[in-house]
Amino acid sequence: MTTRQEDFLDDEVATVTYGNDDDSVVVIIGSGAGGGTLANELAQRGIDVVVIEAGPRFRETDFQNDEYAMYDMLTWTDPRSCTGSSPIAKHFSDSPTWVCKGVGGTTLHWAAMTPRFQAHEFKTRTTYGAIAGANNWDWPLNLSDLEPFYDRAEDKMGVTGTHGVPMPPENNNFKVIKTGGRRVGYSQIDTNSVAINTEPRDGRNGCDQIGFCQQGCRSGAKWSTMNSEIPKAEATGHCEVRPNCMALQIEQGSDGRVSGVLYADENGNRQLQKARIVCVAGNSIETPRLLLNSESSLSPDGLANSSGQVGKNYMRHMFGFVYGQFERPVNMHRGITVAGIIRDEAEFNDSRGFVGGYYFLASSLGLPYFSAFFDPGAWGAEHTRWIDSYNHTSSICVLGEDMAMESNRVSLHATRKDQFGLPIPNLHLDDHPNELAMKNHGYKQSVEIFKAAGATRVFEGPPLPASHNLGTCRMSAEASDGVVNSFGRTHDVSNLFISDGSQFTSSMAGNPTLTIVALAIRQAEHIANKMQNNEV
Ligand SMILES: Cc1cc2nc3c(=O)[nH]c(=O)nc-3n(C[C@H](O)[C@H](O)[C@H](O)COP(=O)(O)OP(=O)(O)OC[C@H]3O[C@@H](n4cnc5c(N)ncnc54)[C@H](O)[C@@H]3O)c2cc1C
Ligand code: SF4
Image 1 (cartoon, protein in one colour):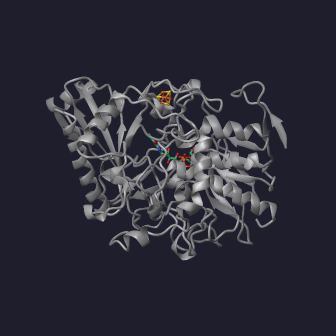
Image 2: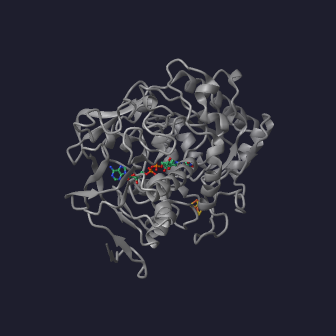
Image 3: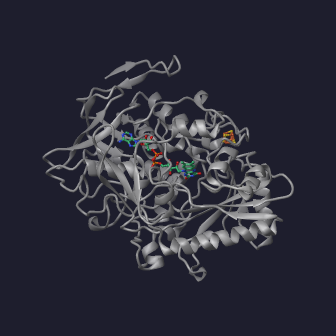
């Protein structure tokens, strides 16, 4: 073990390095919400960690208040394909998902909204029953198991409305939606729980309300693993981050345990990092892809895949935008991107004709994204009128639970290969009827909200690439029903863990990242105990 100085770090910060043959380290693949948090939690306990991250390292000064420039800089654009009957497969066949490649993972792009699961959302099989065409299942966890870890995650991330962090101020987009929402009878309306500093906290600045949260946040008010977990982990002297390094395969020894990770380094050279434990946190497309690409004579169908569930039960939320236009300017882009929420429809109430619930989010788009996503491919005077009236437009995002389906899955493409010669991932995606019924309800109610607020015109937007990618290595009580146990340890391999959103058994109505972070804190505690007792 030696120390080295990186030119991207402040002068006084030195990071540790570990040899490739050091088999005492925990190797974490991916530095996003799950991987970055796990790295810090382990390093704080004195455990030596190597983080292998496919993307580069950024600094806050690299971020620009420019949607397209930041999309190009931060987004994972390696080849992917998409099949199935969902409109996503038709409109975004090469880019069905929106995730990041860089130290910090998709917390670089994220809008920082942080709801907790509701109790029934952990028990969708018990609560909803068997649903035709779905593979909805119960988590081997209850809300009460996760509550202490939610609390620690909210403190770590500085979530508004918790731990003394003030709620965000109201912006115009929120005021429109609050007014319309109240008029149609909703009451659970507020400016949202977000992992954004409304005042300086934990070495990060307070929010300037400039509205480029999804472009990295130049002022550092938004929590990301880039600006929080990773530097804290490195400061312990127990964490080495290797940017621009792509994990290609996980090696399995003849005893069935994993022994190391084969990766392509920043120069494209193959390296093998030995490991005591491997934790995979590459987001819900790359994580199952890596397991499937790690097949061997011991695991001919892919690593940790004796159940055949690796890659299956992919979820990405019911998700879409509805727009309202007003006589007076709204300027929705001013202020935090997701500036408020209506929670009334999130509860379980199957009298609406669907199970699961959804939220209305006061979620704005900057003009470049608005032009691109409003109605891709549209043309003509009516379309131009909408784009011209951007400043008078308000936007609601409806976000709800979608059902796990076995056929919605990540598999290896039969012929297409990436730059390393490995099969690219294919995502198969069909919409479940429950999701379509929920979407229709959410869109209809959004139109009512806008009309009640005085909108002169409304528009129901098309689906967009998935920014929440979940499932594909789900938790289950029985090994035959999923891939990992309640601590994210694979059922098949005692020293292989899944540490990202792939673990999710159901998607819940709200955004996933607070839960990914809470699970990572819980997993770190579990791993540390097991290591201390020499049980792993
Ligand atoms: C525009 C946008 C807005 C969002 N807003 C919200 C929000 O408001 N609230 C919320 O809860 N969520 C939000 N999300 C989603 C949230 O960002 C993700 O759910 C979360 O970051 C997922 O965490 P993860 O650990 O699963 O993966 P990620 O954070 O995506 O991290 C995965 C990392 O693994 C790396 N990686 C992948 N494969 C390999 C490999 N083979 N070798 C090495 N490294 C690899 C990737 O480069 C990446 O850095 C948003 C996402 C987007 C795109
Ligand atoms: S609104 Fe706040 S969190 Fe969003 S980019 Fe600006 S400073 Fe960052």
